[in-house]
Length: 143
Picture 1 (spheres, rainbow, N blue to C red):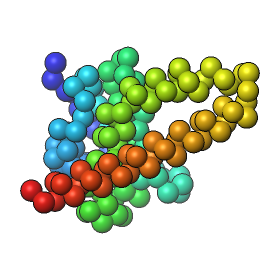
Picture 2 (cartoon, rainbow, N blue to C red):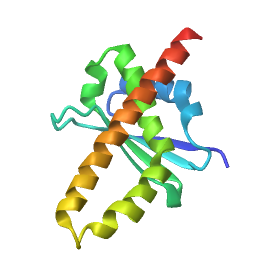
Picture 3 (tube, rainbow, N blue to C red):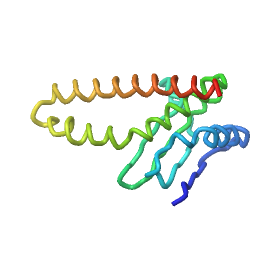
């Protein structure tokens, strides 16, 4: 099945084209299980996040929200940010397993352990994703 890509809520046509070019350039990173990718524009909440990803492996869909602040970043940062979000999509199945099998079961029995595991897994996943995105970008830049 071919990947369906939807670009939603973009009011700035040049921003939409910019994202489309980045998605096209890096879609090889996306997993084969993905059937639908929604790329949504949103107004930044000022939290420092240029993009947010939510994937549902069981439904074969991912949503990536691109903040307006993304377009203030350099081309290098935009490129790396898309790679970063695509790696989140690729690793969604693993993260869902870890969260559902190892972290969520302790939520009610040991809230402090749950909070620790939840935050620690978030930091580890973000660190790994960022490091991996830098590696992929460096390899792409050398081609």
